[in-house]
Image (cartoon, rainbow, N blue to C red):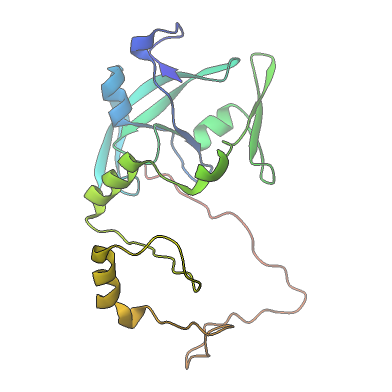
Amino acid sequence: MVSSGWERKAVHEMHLRRIIDSGICENMVSKEMVDKLNLQCEKHPHPYRIAWFKKGNKVIVDKRCLIKFYIGKTYKDEVWCDVIPMDACHVLLGRPWQYDRKVMHDGERNTYTFWKEGSKVILLPLKDVGEAKNMLPEREIVKEMKVTGFYYVLMVQKEEGGGIPIPAEVAKVLEEYSDVIPDYLPDGLPPKRDIQHLIDLILGESLPNQEAYTMSPT
């Protein structure tokens, strides 16, 4: 949850979609959330451009906002975040938050552990809900279609009879693109090509499995 103050006023609260990403060099907040909650912003001391959070052209990050939020019943915090028009989430906690809170990340369990005001805080990943874990709400699908301008449809066809008949509109599409939907798929891997993209490994050497270093845009 996020609010303009610690008191829980309904007019100043909303469910917070948050992401923790160690590859991001700034803390960021969605402009949509800032506008809805009418949060106070100030000029960014070091404006910069960014492009990978929202589809389209680059945007100038020239404002920042002090976000006060709470997660669960015990952890509450405030973080300075750059205001950007991002679609991924409401608040993105990057390296500054993890550095200031001395956060320890457990990659296997995907948990974040730190101490806040003498209390140990462990942030757990969201749990999947039943069979809907791989499904999107209708509004999210419609929104994505409007942004991208195109979409794909996946049809699953059973060899045995029965089931729901294919609608006439879908049958026309399947007939139009029948050349890319073969009736038989061979078992095994695809045949070798003329060009093979191989990486020669040296016996006894260790792979450079280091995290990619991300430099701050400033």
